[in-house]
Image (cartoon, rainbow, N blue to C red; front, side, top):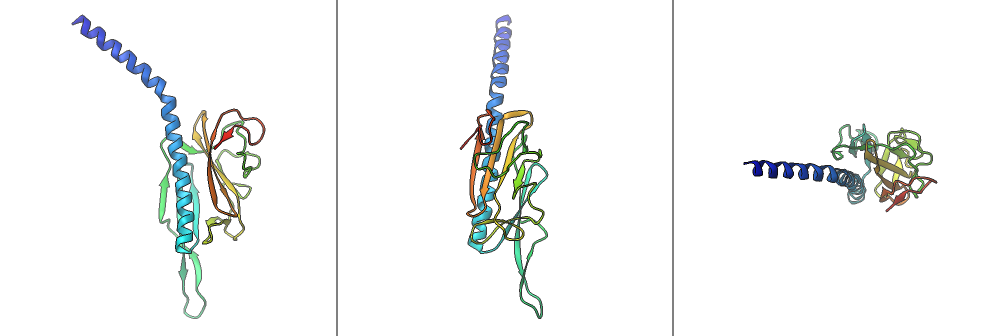
Length: 198
């Protein structure tokens, strides 16, 4: 009986050590999955705008959700048809557990340099505006990414797990082409653009 108890204690100790050792790996997997999710939603929005030949608007809600809206054609009795954005999103995607849109103290911009000086903690920078332009953000039917006035904008979505700078990730969008890339940190931030790799 004593031997059985000793074996059980040894198994519990080894299991506890393994769980503690695997926690950083688990956090990296969570943030990688969330980054892939953001990148996938943005790519789906772009492809949808091209295939359906309509504008798809994007909104980042709080620190953990992405919403997509469609523009709909509305006809008036005597006037020309107009495009009006739908009032409810057709897709709302929450990102992974423990991961949020955020930046870390000392974090620099990605090598794409779409965010300029990172000053706000929200993690969303498009068109040189923290949180995105007031006029909105949209993928057009030609695949470009613009503000609500049709001007191409570049931008970055920063993600991470609170208090863990090694989990910093970023997804960039090039306005003129709609190209979407993801970045991971090497956590050696210094000069702007340093500390990131594809």
